[in-house]
Length: 312
Image (tube, rainbow, N blue to C red; front, side, top):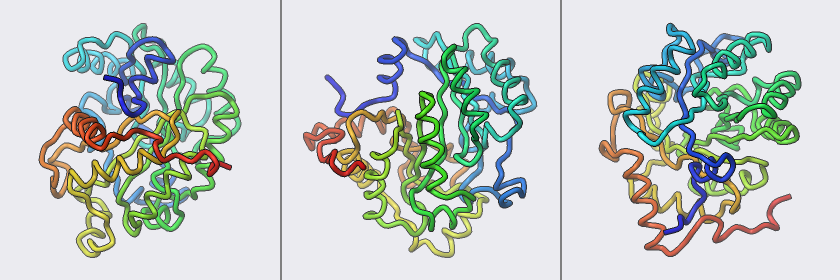
């Protein structure tokens, strides 16, 4: 059966003709809202240890992490033969261009690595870095993944992102001008945002020249500033039961333009890192099955309610 939304696996197969598996690389970066150049403390929801695998630690060399990552994924996904080095933790363009070149080119030297995915912030790219990545993208796969999180400046301020939404728009547009593949990350349920405001995010995403999007429901990670905020002001947080979230996401999906790919629609944090597990210990594969089942039940699909005239 044909899927009722554009899956990111489909994007790889359509564009590159094969399945590509990401291997997470921790290259020891930090962020400007951690080191004091913009702020300290980082994003209020963030504990990177909750979001990347145990084989990926900065005390290991890049090639060592790649080798362990390949072994890890061979056991889980036996069909994977080609890999993307995914520079994920923190802001992976937050260094001099010379340093970035040395890291990226080291990863690309591995014979099983077919390209790069670079996770970063929109305020950590500039003309020089984007020009370099544009040139590199003519030789190998290069995908930039921007953490945007919210289209509302009030939210970005509250969660200590340290950048504005307009900065994200500018970075995404500059990346698109250079023909670099790119995705963006958004979080549903950040404090202070209503259901109506989150739904309006779909219209903003439709205006952006993105290839893909990744969505997460907010999960309250232990020992973060957001955990303290949640304990004091839980009424400010939009919380979803599992079935509510799936229907909510389908409502959102109906508004998204048809040519954007969905990399993820929900997050999965190991239970030991979160202060509660309201959905139980459900895994991503089961979440996807529930999403597809509900799409069939509702007889709907991505972009069903999309209005092209709203894109300026």
